[in-house]
Length: 394
Image (cartoon, rainbow, N blue to C red; front, side, top):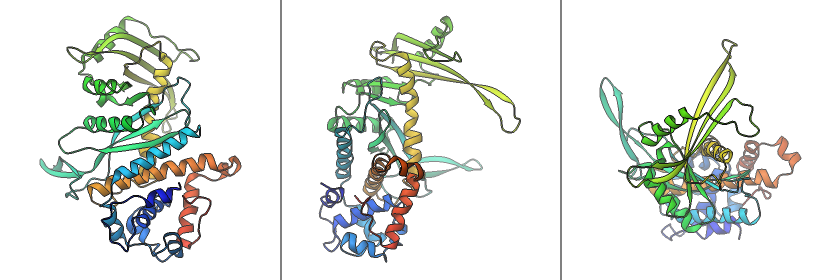
């Protein structure tokens, strides 16, 4: 079934009869595909004949689009994201890396903050207002799940962080939902230092999955123990390296007090030479990494732990950075708790599809001279000029 037909099947019937849900969802999806940036930006193209041919009616106003989407169910967009993954997996478009483990990278992200509450979905915090005074800041925040394979990355889902809870609690709900619907899509959960705590590890282990998390909290007993052990043993040079790196692989350690979890810690020191632009002088920079994992060395060698640990940055570089700067998902399109989640999911679906179309559907010669940004610009120009984009339309 085509995506436009799947979008048309979503809705709860609470919208006005003269405004089909299918038209609203398709318009919003095309808003992300064309990177219009906002509902008002999309409404600037209402006069284009593209909409009457595509939707069978004139494009609804920005207020109508926002009102209708606030009454929809985000879980139906989650179904489309899962369907996208299933189709990519079936077409062999998502191979596992050489070590054989698919990684689900989780991390928190917040959109633009405000000085006044916009809706019930916003969290609040106290910030310094100057002169010793404090003021309340409001912001939406969610945890994203980013699937990382050999040479492709896809968004799977998000979970809003609720008032009074931390990021880890939202991440647990996210991982459990992904596992419930796609139990075999990932083998290991990869996260930053906030997640290096026993309750999170237990929750993931209970699902039959493993964890790799950054270990950087100096107050943890495990961190101090690792540093003491590394001082007693010289690090090794992994095969294929030049000798400027040193790696330690420590087993039989425990995360958490009391009945802790048996873990393994990989410590990595990397030295690089950088040339300062201002002084034209070379300087040696040392980076230290600590990763704590539940995976035994017989299953995942030391070098593979290092590679997966570094791939955690995929959710920042190829994930949040792309959807924030390229797909404008840091913009709050509609200040409503349901609309914010649904539109973020819809934007992630558009990002998945656009990247896949560019990487897999375009011929190498065309892809070499046409970036994804240029392709999206052509798509948006077609909407504004009333040109039907048959080749790229969902």
